[in-house]
Image 1 (cartoon, helix red, strand yellow):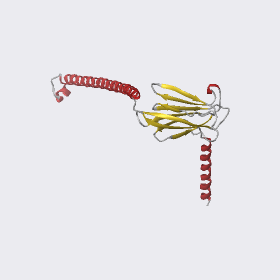
Image 2 (tube, helix red, strand yellow):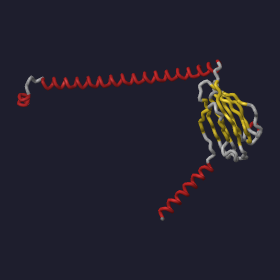
Image 3 (cartoon, helix red, strand yellow):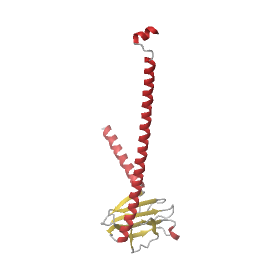
Image 4 (spheres, one colour):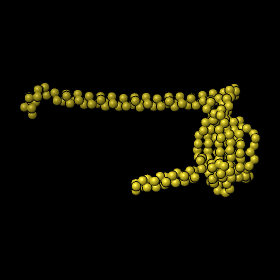
Length: 219
């Protein structure tokens, strides 16, 4: 019975710890997501409750298809308003021909505009230690794009990437070959010196022209 109560108390303690962890976890950090054709929601931590203070959340969103665009629609916005959104803010970047700033958002007026971005998007949510609001809800999804401009961009981008990989692999192979040759020469010279030393000892030992018994008698 004592063991039962001890286990029960342990179970309750573990549940309390898990509940505390869930309450204090702001649900964000550095997170990677995949955009598909089905719309997915992204919300501020603790939504619809107020978001935590002194928080930085980063989401990297990439499309599952190579030639595609990511669309983002803002469904709800309630972020502390300030000049240039210097306090709390939601910032969106796209990675199309390099990192490109798209928009920085705060306040409580959600735009009906749908953002059409590249295949890779970064979303950053930052808060200070002042006011807490309910935050944001946005929806993202992927749409195929086989336009010539996009094809040229990704072909050029990944061609450069593979060229770099080929150069690195070639250099590594060359270095490995040089190291192999150096070690082979080293061991060959070491073996040659050992053989030469053995031959000298044989010559010195047989230089008396005597067999073993005569050599011992001579000594």
